[in-house]
Length: 162
Image (cartoon, rainbow, N blue to C red; front, side):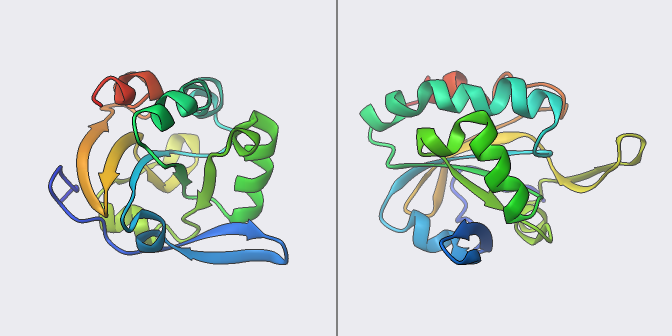
């Protein structure tokens, strides 16, 4: 069953690149006492994710901050090396977006947001969604019906809910 507004995020250990290589980061630590925007997508370097989803949050990052959102987090079922390279190549890292890998997909599965599409090589990937989380509780959740579409889960659409 997919997570819904009012639910508490499952605690997860996600991966990012630190000064000495990959490091684990607790999602509950990143969200405790804060309002955060989290967006998740099927995969780094894929079409819609690269040309629409990530750029929408780069464009709106300062607008989120102006409305009290302290952190913007991107999650994908990828390893931290890929997430760092992708964040660097898209400008997301420079914009201050946290690029976190859910390498084994455990967070995505706990969220009830996993899917598989063998024809395109996607196994255990994340559906495309975006949410506002306040102190670990989901306040707003926008999930796309199709992983190739970025409409309700884009930065502008999520920002409009604040």
